[in-house]
Image (cartoon, rainbow, N blue to C red; front, side):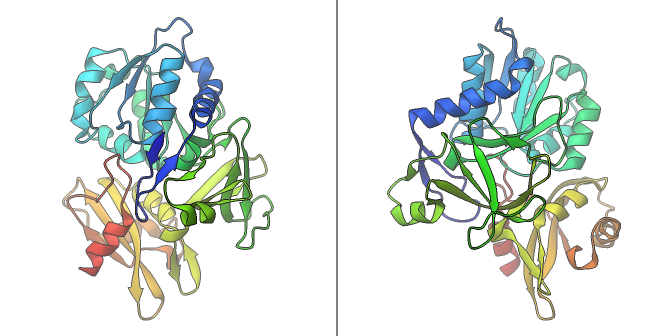
Length: 346
């Protein structure tokens, strides 16, 4: 299977995934959430993301087929009203998506407790799940969002939050048969709690990138998949993803990660979407800029900045806030920060 990457940080690449990669990933997913599935085939799964996205194909549809669920296919989750008839006409029990989709659905007037009365499992992947969005989702639906973490290059999931032991904002523990480590720039393993690049080895790691031997050599070293993501493992073995290496902002020599700032701003009432980037600054090398989509026309940039004061140290707070009608995203809903940087440059 040639499954293409999202292209959020650069040119999309075709990951060569074997039959073994795909089946191991589906089996892993099934083993972790099997107690939330009916052996009689009475479940209904909404496949809300397009199948060219690895999460939809390998983490939602294939496990759904494996346990005999009715899979309802949505051609496109944008706008979120496209999901309305699926939830109204089917007893949806399983729903997985991406943070921006969960946030958008919470703004839909038709999305009520009644239409999700059968829901019993929700999963999140593809991008960082904002805690504020997850809390609002659970308040409405009564179902927690179990976050996972993975890449196209590993056929889907590297880590998943165990059912019954979910920790909001945390990406879970390594899936069976997969080893996850945190390393520094020289490849040395970091102790628990120390940041570094996330690398992994297991039966789901791709053969390589189609026709891209140099890119393959940069990504797979001695059998280890170098993800390009920064994170750390805590004492219990749970993975905390901080951000992409390429999206890190350098403010006066300090590392600042957009995900952390986006998570804080998304908790402000009236904020529907947010994207954060670093922009050039004469004094601090880079400064934090937030692009905000608001449902409240009275929110000001000063209010957004003031909201951050209680949760972020000074150098992490946005110095610039711009309100926009829409945050540029991939077709599956990932924030395109490189497009935000282009918008600022223009």
